[in-house]
Length: 234
Image 1 (cartoon, one colour):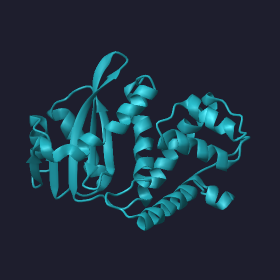
Image 2 (cartoon, one colour):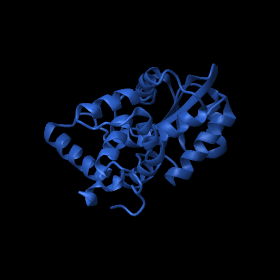
Image 3 (tube, one colour):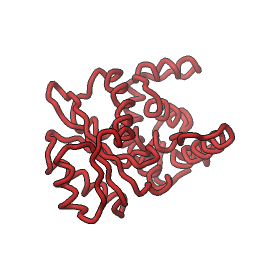
């Protein structure tokens, strides 16, 4: 079992815990739906227990997935979308590469150059290298942030070029409806930091044939078994 994952003092075996966490972050399911899906398989566990498993193990799994997924592409697409948190408008800033893999997200209360700089600095710290090209919409804050943080990077500003980043918001909109809106900025940040890494692991590239898809999916499940520790627990 992975040394960084411990299931001590849990009455359910690692396979069930890992499966519940996978269901919750991989699919647009509420905690109660995950509870019902487990019950159908004869596993009696409350939705509150599933919630605690997601909080306890999710971040650990996400960190290990991040170490195992391939390096990001050299073209970054950045976009921001408004989200409502406890009756107040916030902005979810998101970056994906040219393959649709999520690089990072940042929840902030502002939509200005300072917020854009925070996102770029966070991206550089996580990725360790600047992109070849940065693509955004025409929000002026991106240009100001790019000049201050990554002055040598080519910057293309065109709404039509940024569909990849805009489309990446769609799964989060679905989760927002299922979760009946997010409760706090911290909750959004914690949830998406896990959700996006699980999505990256099981990401399907465009124009993938059936054979490659099956191979990639088998590899993704193998990595999941390794990061959750169930490969060695089996």
